[in-house]
Length: 335
Image 1 (cartoon, rainbow, N blue to C red):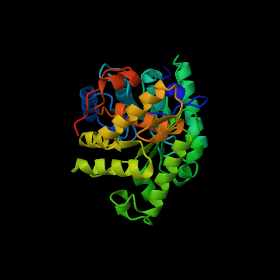
Image 2: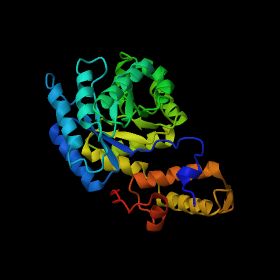
Image 3: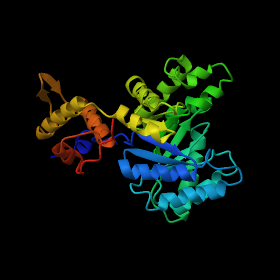
Image 4: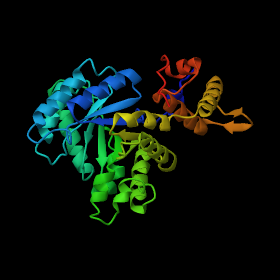
């Protein structure tokens, strides 16, 4: 029987799928703590080791080597550790690429490019990454994630998302607000972000660009780290109202609420499983389920529900997970 990934995307690439939480860590202590938590919870969140804001001035080389060493270490159990380099205009950018790609490119989950100004800049950065990888004997194409936090990058979001090696676009909320030089209130960096027209427009443009090209839109930081539920609420807003399928975490306490916010409800999982099992049995032709007609269009939707359930470690019948993912049950993240 054909698997959904083969049956439902014939002639086109299936959309990218990533863990729903992207956790940023800058210092060595926080990096190691994040790796330990990932080993405990499983690959339900990615880790981004931060060379841009994490490195002290003058210590950029040492910080990049630290990140590369951790990516190559046994602590990176699941291969889901990426790194954010300095921006392409920074003096340390080429050094970051040289160290990170040549020494850890074989195991790096992704490379994040911050503060880009447009698609041409991303293309040039990708060319440098690929040339560095080739010189080091690394055959794989390292996925690239791009931070959209400038006016010009937002204007070219669709062109950036269309680049084959780009896997994810993230919204850099705080830098984007600052780029308006006081025209957007500080509250839009927090609770008002979903209602302020300029911020809502930016978030929608990024999400639309990603979905048009099968890439992952990642929601920005939640600066409130005293109440982890705020990050969960933001994730829920971003998912339900703006089409985001991933979100940043900047504190370990935010990870579980974010993952829980993206997890489908048990009723959704059961419905998706029933529909896809019946569709698979019918050779992916139209079926009738609960007095409703379903075909390949709705199958794609329900397949996204199951993929999200699997990615978040949500409870799923053993037979269903084995049937569609061929893997044992992940540890469910406590709600």
